[in-house]
Every structure is written in C-alpha cells, then in structure tokens.
Image 1: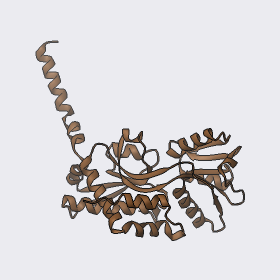
Image 2 (image 1 turned 90 degrees about the vertical axis):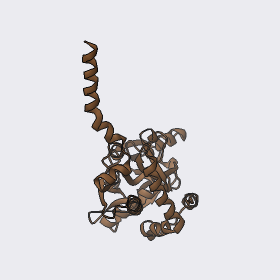
Image 3 (image 1 turned 180 degrees about the horizontal axis):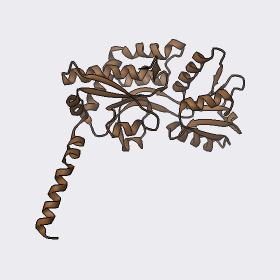
Image 4 (image 1 turned 180 degrees about the vertical axis):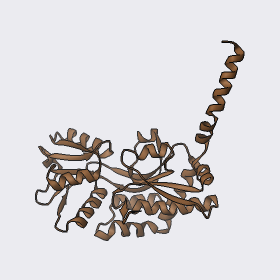
Length: 290
C-alpha cells in the first residue's frame, strides 16, 4: 500500500467518525439545548421514590427532578424546553444514561465507587439501608432468623451483594433467590414462594403500600435491623461537570429553602414514617452555599 493511499484511507475514516465524535463531545447541556428537550429516566417499581400513579411518573425523586428541569430551563434560557419522562429498569438505568437515552436518572440508586467507572452521581438525595420484609403471619424479625429461609433479592443490585456479604459474615445459611425486579420479589413473598424479600428499607415501604392498595387485608413485618448503608443520588453522564453543577445547585437550593421537608412529608411521612437521624444529617450536609 502506497503512502498516498494510506493517507486517503485515514482521511476517509476521520470523516466517517466525525459525526460520532462530535455527538459524544457535546455535553448534556449542549444536547438538551440543541433538541430543546430534557429526558428524565424514572423507575416504575421504586415507590415512594419513583413509580407511576395513574400512568404518570410520581414520587420523591421524580419531584426533585421536576425542580431540576426548571433549573435547567432557566440556565439555558429555554422557556419552551420540553421535559420527557422515560421508563428505565434496574438493569437498563445505567446504559440509558451512558447511551444518552436519558439525561438524568431519577429513581432509587445507590452511589458506589464501582458504578462511578461508568456514570457520575449528583449530591445525595436520600439515605436508607437494606433490610427484609416478611408476612406478618410468619414474621422474621432478627436477621439471624433467616437461617434456612428463602430470601428474594433483585439480581445485580447493591442489596444483593450487601446481603450476600452479611449472611456470609454472620454464618447465616439462608437461600438467596434472585428475581428480575421488585414486583416479582414482592409477588413471590405474597404467594409464599419465598420467606422474605430483601431490598432497601424505603423501597420495601413502598412495596408494602402497593400491596395494601391491592389488598387491605395484607399485613407485613419489617426486619429488626439494617444490613447495609445505602446513600441515594441521581445518575448523570460521566465527566460532565457543567450539567452536574446545574443539577447540584438545584438540589442544594431545595435543601436550603426547606422544600425537601415538604417532599419527604408528601411521599414518605404521610404514612407515619419519620426521617432517620442519618437522613436528617444528610439534609444538613447537602445544604451547600453559593
């Protein structure tokens, strides 16, 4: 192959790749401004943080993202900016952000260092911990009572890894049953196919609320202790400091002006749940000033 031919081939390759390179070189704010639309990913199975009510996205995290949308609109000076909500799952949420299908994911996602190899996180928005839910007719209070029991857990979640480590450290011989999503785990618990369902405490509260909506006679029992620490945040594209700053400013403003208390009461406190000391500390720590 001649030198001239090689140069021409390299030039053609550069031209072919230029649109792709240009696309990924754009930051989130640039892409939002160009299409006039902010795309928010949300979960349907993470009540009270992110779920659907009457076919529409709802919840604590969704409300926070609604306020973030307003901040993005103001920052870009786009009064007609469209806000679209896109369903994501536990399995698809990170790919959706990485691939640009959504600009931000607003669900119940735990910050981990491993996940930060693919995505970035905003300021923390909530904190909870992993525990179990069982039927009141056969309650499992202390977690060492899981010995010999079947425990459903959503595969690939931080709950699964934390529960596995906890059981191993405590020498508790429980059988972990992997399920595709929280609704499946809850259904198996209600049918008696498993003895307990493990997830983040706040999410289990939401699952219990859903079950009570379907059956007023349903009754559940929570585990007596937590087996993990789960700090939640919103998921954004990696290495996109400009967009993350706009988002973090909106979140910090929520905490400074006290709107977070109203959000908590609307979605969590209305069923009698009080904010934990850890959550109250988070709210104080996230009130960053300009």
